[in-house]
Amino acid sequence: MRSRRPSARTAARLGGLLAALLLTASPAAAKDYLLTGAKPDKLVLVDAAARKVERVLTIPGGGVAPGTIVPSPDGRVAYVINNHMGSVSGIDLDSGKQVFRADFSSGDLRVRALFGMDVSPDGKELYVFQAPVRLLPGEYRVEDTRIAVYSTADGVGAKPVRLLPAPRRIAVLAFSRDGGTLWALGWDIYGLDPKTGAVKETHKVLNRTLANHSPPDVLDIWPQFEQAATLSAPYFTARTDLAATDPGAFRTGLMTLDLASGRMDMRDFEDTSAVIFSSVVSPVKRTEAYSVYTQLSKIDADGGKLVKRVDLPHTYYSINVSSDGKEVYVGGTGCDIGVYSTDTLDRVGQVEIAGCPDQGIASLRVIRR
Image (tube, rainbow, N blue to C red):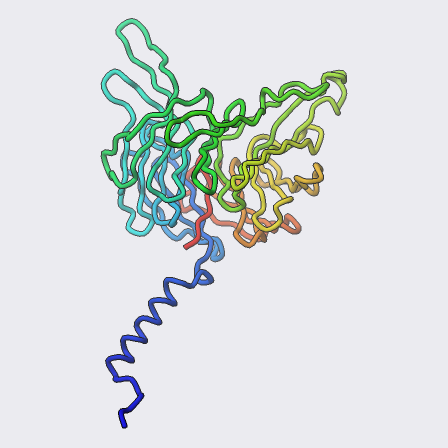
C-alpha cells in the first residue's frame, strides 16, 4: 500500500505556501501610520501606535515646504506637492527613492498646483488642479485653470496624459469610491467626469440659498477623507434677520460629502466661535466629526450640535482619525502631532519630529501598512 504521508519536499512547499498566504492575506497585521511633511523638504512617516517617527524621507528639489500629500491606494508611495507648488513628487515610503516626478512649468508657461490633488482608486492616474500663467514680454496673462492627469507609471519626468477643464478656486480633489466621479471642492462641490472633466452634477455651497442666511463660506485645503470615505469641511454663514451685534447672527456648520453615495449635507452646529477650516469624520461612528485649530472640537454631525471642546497647547492646522475610531490626531503648524481620545478628548500621546521642523500646511494622512 502506498503511503499517504506527503514527502519532505511536498511538505516544505505546502509550508512555504501557507506562510506566504498568511503574510499577504492577514489584514489584522496591518496598522495605522501617519504621513505628514516638514519644512523644507521632508516627508515624515509615523508609527501611530508606537508614538514614534518611523522614518524621515527627503523630497529631491523640495523647495521650502511640502504641501498636499496623497498616498497611493496600496500605501507604498506618497505623492507630494513641492518645489514652491511647481512640482509633484512620488516618494517610495520604504526605499525613500523618488519614483515619480512631474514639473509643471515649461517655456513661458508658469504653472502652480495650489492644493487640489488625488489619485485614482486603482492607483494608475494622478489628478492635479493647476493654475497656469503665461509670462509675456509686457504682461502676465492668466490662463484657464485645469486638472492635469498623469500616469503614475511614467515615473520621473512624467508629462500630463490629458488636461481637463476645471472651475477656478478648487481647493480639494476627492475621488468617489467607485472611481466614476472626481469631486472638486471650490465655491460649490462639482462632480467631474474623470475622463473628460465635464461637470456631471453640482452640490451648491456658496450658491446655496437659505432663507435669512448669507451665502456659506468654506476655507479648507486639507484632504483627510480616507478613513470614513467622507469629505468634510466647516462652513460659515450669517443670519441676515439678526443684527450684526447679536451673538447668534454668525453661524458655523459642517458640510459632509459621502464619497460612496455622493450625498451632501450641510448643517449648522453652533454660533461661530472656535472652528476655522479643518475637520474629519469618524470611520466607526459616522455621525461624529472632529475639528481643530486652537481647540479640538467634537461635533454631532447628525444632530447639528457641539458635543465637547478642549484647549490645545498651540495651533494645529490638520486633523485625522485612527482606523478604529478611538484616536484623533492633530498636526500641521509646529513639529509635533498630538494624539487625543475620541471618547474623552483627553491628550493620550504625542509624537515629536526630531529637530523641531515646522509642518506648515502639509496634509496629515493615515495609511495602513
